[in-house]
Image (cartoon, rainbow, N blue to C red):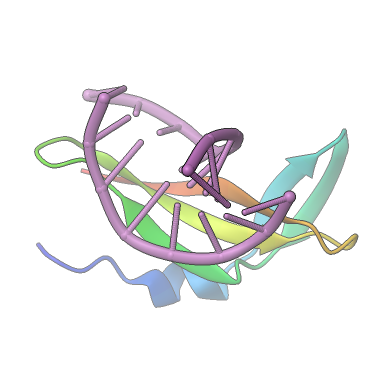
Length: 62
DNA sequence: TTAATTTT
DNA sequence: AAAATTAA
């Protein structure tokens, strides 16, 4: 099956850790990271309260 | 190493 | 231009 619903991931909040702090954040952007012929993961781009942006895996692709 | 995408 | 993100 082709397209993963990034909208699904966009709507939810995820626990993100940075420098020992935990934040519950919604991703600014979501995409699939999947090498050809292998399983992949879903990456979310998050913005911390400090303004820094970090990536975190938020899902798996079978 | 590979994948997409953005930040640094 | 390189790092970072995950795991196969």
